[in-house]
Length: 156
Image 1 (spheres, rainbow, N blue to C red):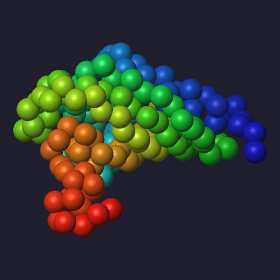
Image 2 (image 1 turned 180 degrees about the horizontal axis):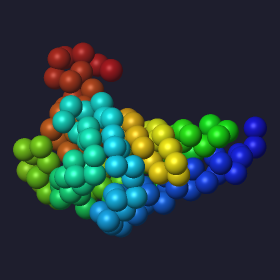
Image 3 (image 1 turned 180 degrees about the vertical axis):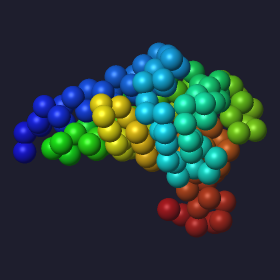
Image 4 (image 1 turned 135 degrees about the horizontal axis):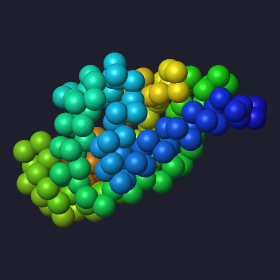
């Protein structure tokens, strides 16, 4: 099925927002979201209700991880453009404290999926599914499955 004008515009809206906020750290873009914006997240404590909470969460994350780079792997939208799904690869450097974990200067690469709901040409909701376990393993906070298997005396 070919992308419609509505779906193409919605995909462009989401990509511009993500690049401006995540890559360029342009926090003023948060004002472009609906006032009742909600960010849903699988990681406890990372959900955000409203502009102020979202900015607080982004600043916390940005303070811990620099040089954020996002490569879009796949994007698609519903025909009317109400929902957009973006599958991305993120690369960052862990050079600030994160959730009590001291900086490790580790280069991290994780996959993420963001589903966005568009209402009145504004992002109203986002659902983030980031490989948080992979992130924590790469900064050394959680052992990898290989490390767990070798410490238990079992091979993989």
